[in-house]
Image 1 (cartoon, rainbow, N blue to C red):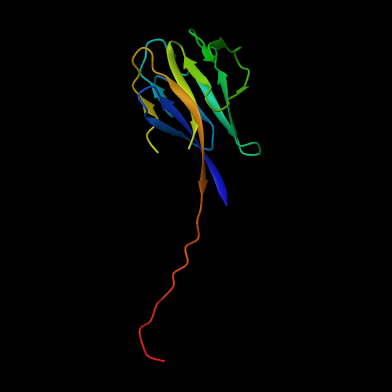
Image 2: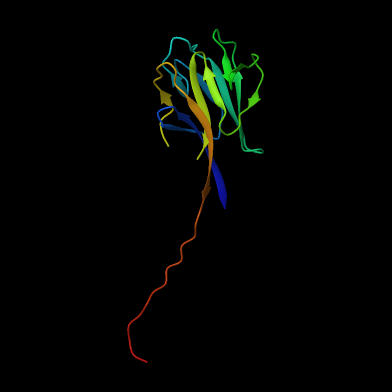
Amino acid sequence: MSLTSWFLVSSGGTRHRLPREMIFVGRDDCELMLQSRSVDKQHAVINYEAASDEHKVKDLGSLNGTFVNDVRIQEQMYITLKVDDKLRFGYDILSESAGSSSLTVFCGFPAVFLLCAIPMVIFHIHFVSLGVGGC
């Protein structure tokens, strides 16, 4: 059985696992909190679609915008994220990656994250007992 875990990876290498559910991005009371004045209280939403194993981002009408690969996305329009996409909320840059940690991010300028996907394989281990004795 193979599963994929998706992460946002900061420029410093810190990985933040993206859950398989919708999360809000912003300064206050959000699942992904970015401590930056360029980020609105509720800035954007990242939604997970199980059927396609994809994350999509949507700007919630923020003042400073949400950007994918330096292109500002239209408000209220979902954009599918791909591995190695650069995701920026206001002036803070994030990237998506696949592959656990807290989703609270304290950003400097800029904070870069990549989208990464890492297949997770579940192994079945069989134990064999060896005996000592005569024939």
